[in-house]
Length: 401
Image (cartoon, rainbow, N blue to C red; front, side, top):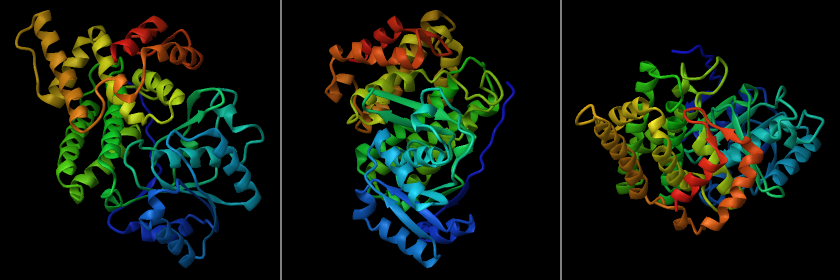
């Protein structure tokens, strides 16, 4: 087990109707005037926004509002939010929505005290040191942004999608009511479950070797979320299954599943190759759901690199699917690993995720553009388990059609 630093300062308020407590919880943080950030679709239709506003009113917490956050949140709205937060002199940013809304809120929160342009944090020109407090009411379990040290923003003008990391912007508060997810469309649920599993896999497939405690936690969460995802396809209002998915999303990305697996203390475990490859797709095609892209890219990456560390992939096959080689030959190993990868992809497809990039309306002619921005973001080589060249990236992309 490698050295590690684990921090989870977020207060989780998890259960039925807890969205109605957001006012008192935010007030307990000392907030008096918040910036309320949301997308504007389901939170309005379902009445959640009205509930949140009523709760804030009852706690005497005033607020300004910023609506219109899209999936794959864009830099322009972040800049607008920073300007609004400064004018309004807010003392907390409150996100009501999923990972996109929370990431937008994070960028606003650390952009307000910074004197330069917020994109500096995403282009390695600045590090986050100051940040307004952040709270959230989670509506879509997927990104895990409600407890993570990660923030990803798209810059449409440059066709770039980049992330930054800092414990400074882990949310102080996360209100989590699984019943808010009962009405999620199946496709959105499936994309979220895929993202959750990928967050775990990115850490699992690091070069640290076996870390029994962390590895068992990781595989156990994957098994639990797979069972729960199957249950909600049959019964969307299965509270326990929805709760399992929601809590799994948090644990998948608050770094618990990477403890002891990172190359150095304070670093995030894994090379995040699949996320790096997929980010280029959804940066150039914002209409592509991140989880849907990952449903195709993760299995394609696994098939391309598994031979670099067969032991790690056998551990995944055993831990998630209870599959072991029939014998100790290379052929036995390949059969077990291939079966596990195929089973994972069958699970994604069974939830309604695409099998190939062509299913998303993409074409092999798009690959050169993706590689162009991938090179800007990652350099000529990136990754950990098997460092990828741009030729490797091209081969993975093309194998996914």
